[in-house]
Image (cartoon, rainbow, N blue to C red; front, side, top):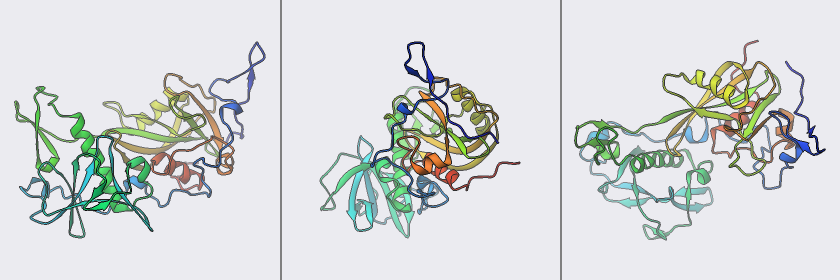
Length: 340
């Protein structure tokens, strides 16, 4: 195990403090504010499964082929607007999605499945002040709501946002360029020229916590993020590449580290617009960070003590993300063991 250290400041020729290769100065990481999203305990994201990976409904894939997937039953319909926000009711137990109670599956609705004999669907629509005559408390999106919703609502919302995104981005066939027709309750688009069925797609991405085999991990930040916000590394899986291979390649590309002991942790749908995040941990073979600034703005090593005490980055990823889930599991030493 390497000794604990963080990149030190270096001085430039004009006496100003510069950023060492792969490192950052204390000025780049201001002290956490009272509103920063910090873990107050060793574990701040509940459960062993990432928030958006939980679901409490049957997606009913066989029913999608029926003329009426609801089979004549009433349907609870969730409206998704063009900002990908949905209506919400606030209650003593927290936020709940506001569903429009319909006597049957509306034309053009996307069938989501059922839970406890209740059928659910989604439609694209405009914001309204009321749903079923009851005032809507707010319209909010998956990022804001995901961590606060129960498993049923969270699972339905992630599914609804993902399938709506697919419809919005795939109105024309990639084979002929012709406008497609929607079939199977929203789960198939058909090329009207070739007759080919086109199914929803998901882009696999890897997200990984790189550690030193001891008490330090690498966190990086993108230039578009607010100052002081750091997260674990991530990237897309390329054609012909395994997820584990993508972990090794992405870490080498972003921070110049060779890694080994790649271990799977968990996965999470991330429909922004259509990703599936595959979470891993990996052990670095050295600790010299060589940041590719075309990929990320900066990266540095942080210790468990720094992250627990709030002495590291100003903000960590939100609780709804698998990134935060993995960080919290690492802080509590709950990730897959590294071979010794």
